[in-house]
Image 1 (cartoon, rainbow, N blue to C red):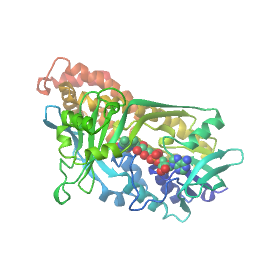
Image 2: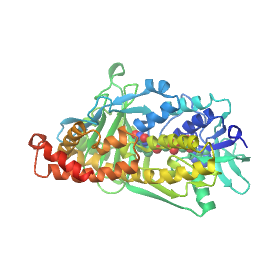
Image 3: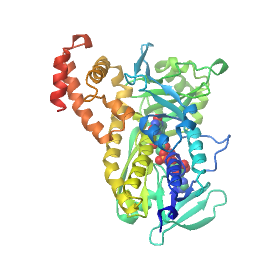
Image 4: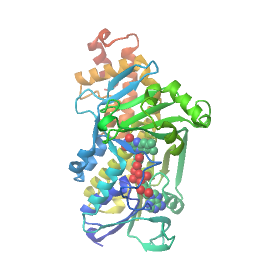
Length: 450
Ligand SMILES: Cc1cc2nc3c(=O)[nH]c(=O)nc-3n(C[C@H](O)[C@H](O)[C@H](O)COP(=O)(O)OP(=O)(O)OC[C@H]3O[C@@H](n4cnc5c(N)ncnc54)[C@H](O)[C@@H]3O)c2cc1C
């Protein structure tokens, strides 16, 4: 079968499935995207999902390669750094990078998804069916079973190659594990999340600094907020499920009011619908999915959250999934669309990177809610930026390696561990970058990173 004519069924027209549809459609494949949700319209709601997301370099590179950036740029809001709302009431801005282009972008999940689906449909051989849920895969017969979400009718369809882009709870993953005897684990944090809203101010203005990712770090928990184009912010509360404070103790308007008044007074002041939002919006779980294998010869592959869902604290789930699409495209070029080579190489190269970003994302939860308030953290960050300025070929802070560069996540993790030792050694007995002997500091970097 020629590569142009091979039929590919992608389960899930979310962010990953839709971008993959764009890329494979451009390569001349016949692609059927199958999505269980109804087609998006103006009134459909996003409740229960993160409404906006932080887009960074890996995601931008993939969108660029798909010819999407011109359409996406107008819906992006740059976030130049973290705006910390400390428990003293003071705010403190901390830039993400030291170069002006080292920013991340807030983007609406729904708007981005809609653009991607629209773009995928521009290819002559790409089709999307909504309202159809995959319920089973028969690998021997190469067929899938779908259930219509409106009339519950069951249908069976053949597939050439099946790609599971059906998210963290992937049905394709479960079928693939069963078929191959593979292993899969889902580890959930003891913390849940809930989305709330900071509405726009007068005339659609932003009530707090627009170009920042806001964090109210409070040790064991935190509130964050990302800007939206309409002047509002989507805030997310990350809190233990049990205990006090914990979701289990926030049971009525009095307890919620008192909790926010005590720990997040500045946020509460700009959240007039806090109580209604709190009791209307669902609490979501935060988990890491690891599994192996990710493919079955050249017949089935899983990608994005379906293969490696991670917790959101590095803002990398979507970016990593988009990078999956870039890697897959590079491998299709390399192996001339021979899917048995591509699928095998994809699993081999990508799995260590997915494991690495999963670990860094969990670690970053502690950084965001706690470590950012430690003066030593600020000092190390300044020293890291200065080292990068002085020796850009050898030293890049780990956060920047993950967010602003396309080096493998596993390499960022490995180098980051070494750099941690470097920073510990340089800052052990000082309180300010002014106290540093830079020649000695550079010698330390060279010794560790040789
Ligand atoms: C609170 C929160 C904040 C986040 N913030 C960020 C961030 O700032 N930056 C970032 O990069 N990432 C972030 N993420 C992660 C990001 O949301 C995911 O990594 C991303 O959505 C993965 O895309 P996906 O297409 O692989 O999966 P999904 O977005 O889950 O899409 C899967 C699609 O498959 C469909 N589907 C599922 N099952 C079936 C089935 N059986 N049949 C048919 N269709 C099916 C679903 O309806 C959905 O449309 C965040 C996640 C959370 C929870």
